[in-house]
Length: 84
Image (tube, rainbow, N blue to C red):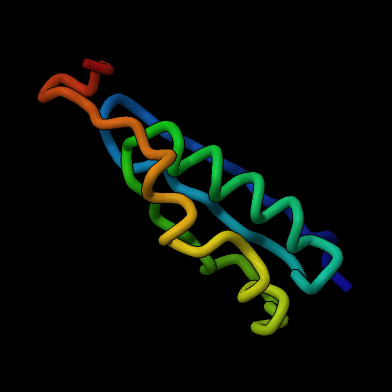
């Protein structure tokens, strides 16, 4: 089993990238929820990179926050990426 890791990176006004590597199941679902919520709240948009994930338990990924729950948390950004 490959150790699961979740990494968030963001530069300038580009979307945040939430990268998953290793094997992910119900045990990593809470950490993924937190990572996605933080990325959305930052207001830059989110890209999820699964290229290094070797296993993802799809039902566990569905247990995270829905877009409907996260969108109201997003902060709008100005043209230069700053908060209004």
